[in-house]
Length: 252
Image 1 (spheres, rainbow, N blue to C red):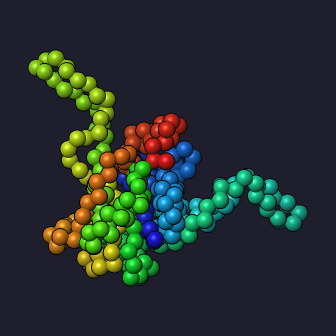
Image 2: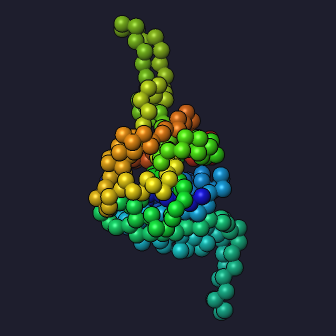
Image 3: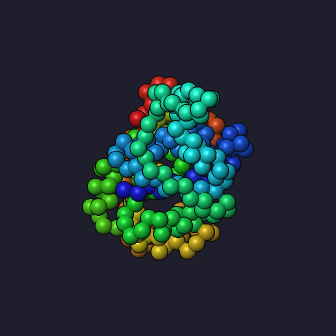
């Protein structure tokens, strides 16, 4: 199944990195977060990617254009120009890189993919969120309700420790627990071709008119993901993901 990944935003809240590179290229464990997201999909057999570019698009294009050289040890015979790769980090992905405009909104970037996706169901996510979502279960859920859109609903971890108080006494302390209430949009959408018709153009924000309209039309369902999910909005988020990479790497 085709997978659209939104990778064109300015990433202003992560300016420590995004002044130089686009947010999807910020590395976690030496590889761009975009690579980790793609690896999640590839693990379930979804390897046909359509990456919507904008800000510093050329850097993402250069990465995939030079992927084999950047992800392998190799030697070069300077007399013949022959390059021999060793320990190649081989992947069998198909990656289509599309410049969707520097200032396009999220919905506009999705709309520009319509002709490439064609008349078929596809998957869609943001280029800055990692999860251990079961994509087989997500797709099964989507096909079970026959609506235009499925969004993955997540409950992120709180940024600070949670205290339960009995007057002045702390009766329970839990370090950075998962929120018990309040589901949010975690990305990892499944969309039908008819959803594209709800997007007007470049100035359309995906999370506004298209999804709001789908909800009013009873064409939007939520798949509840209780497992790991973490976006990378700030340096603090990046540092947390970097530590996770060194440990149990919960996104797989």
